[in-house]
Length: 322
Ligand SMILES: Nc1ncnc2c1ncn2[C@@H]1O[C@H](COP(=O)(O)OP(=O)(O)O)[C@@H](O)[C@H]1O
Ligand SMILES: [Mg+2]
Image (cartoon, rainbow, N blue to C red; front, side):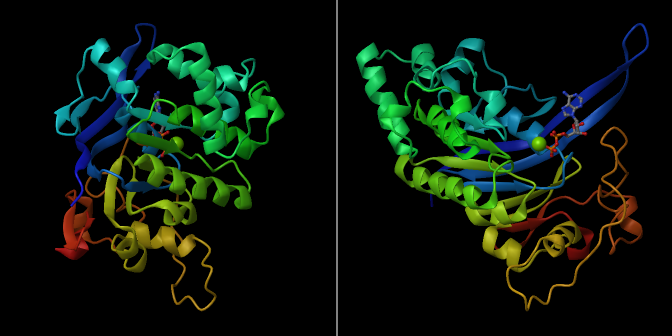
């Protein structure tokens, strides 16, 4: 058994909706509404769900760049939910984030060398000569070259820019990388190159990932376990093999049936979901999915199901399994 790196319990983020001259709070956007999961050391947890389900908000809370409304985040058993700025600064080394668009997350006027060295200058105690050596080593680790040191981000392709963002994230030897739609803007062939690089780096650096994507194929490629989010809730979570082989939640079934299957002889029937994701400012009572669920029954509109283990390391929040 590997050690538990991260434990998230009952995490919520409610954004206030303000209105009128007095900017009174007239409601709450329940972007994340009670999410719990654990992440083992060296593991990749994929998070899927349609746009607006709260994936990014959850990732930003785990990174501690967004204050949770409720809930706790434990790192190696230590509560990091409410921490002093000093404590947080130390923690920043352990957590890094990679975003969809490295074009906007990388300062365009900086040289690659300074972009990758920046975290060292903020946190480290390396001399200038050592920093250059380290930056070159990192560039080579992510498949770039020493000659790239004195170029600017705009001189690189999208895939190469994502490599730069990864080098920067790696610079302080993090324990956890949260990748939020990290390959979503790239061509499919480039996507798999970056995913393969991330898999290699995980082994080499003993990293753990939370890999957020609306794209099931991408999550399937890289994850050990997968969590499915819907309207601020984790509706299903489990070992990748189990979840893809035997999806339990009707929402997961619908997502899987809509994803293009490489195997032509797939027997999976396509389920078309009706309507859009309801507004998280006014979520339905009961099960968050019941308004679109083809299998919903009476109870689903009245009570909210909680996650229960139905198969080994595979939990679902659905009354069909009670
Ligand atoms: N700063 C914010 N203020 C108000 N609402 C927000 C804010 N950030 C996100 N939201 C809302 O929270 C919900 C979840 O958003 P997000 O976490 O970005 O979902 P996802 O990443 O799954 O697409 C959305 O309805 C979004 O509009
Ligand atoms: Mg997002």
